[in-house]
Image (cartoon, rainbow, N blue to C red; front, side, top):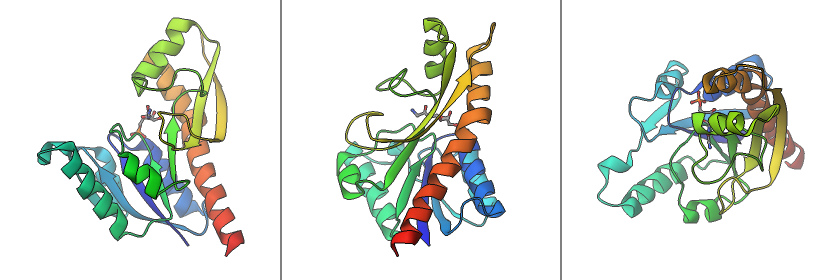
Length: 200
Ligand code: GAR
């Protein structure tokens, strides 16, 4: 059984897609053990609690330094002995020591076709604003492994989405979520769970 932790900052619609995929059996041999947010008001935490999943808030605001926040984040994560950490709209930079410790065990969903519109400063609506400003006709989403860079790790899955005439950033964000993110994030977790099962 793949033990999964999900890190979130906001609404958690990607988390919901993962929870639904576990419930429906699309993701097999995986269990969501914990959901962690840096934001105590994140609706994602409610979604986790509704599913009887441990929901923790670990906010940098509650620690005197970034280092102490990172210590707490890492030690709480370690307690769950996770096989996979999913960044599902987690808008806090994770410490390099965590990336090294969990090498090839952290994945991220990004709302563009990497290498377009990614890297430092590209998150949430900003990604879609940049795509519209550039005038691309196709955008999409990417699930990738997390390495020491920002959005630079190996790509697992991508899905393209059409940009339509007159789209606002909000329109595009919604279409990319519905047509790409909520599909490829559960698919990627299902793939990783299957790989682990085959190795066992
Ligand atoms: C998603 O669109 C995700 O791709 C994005 O944040 C949103 C979270 O929404 N992540 C990034 O921009 C990371 N660079 P959600 O809380 O409803 O899943």
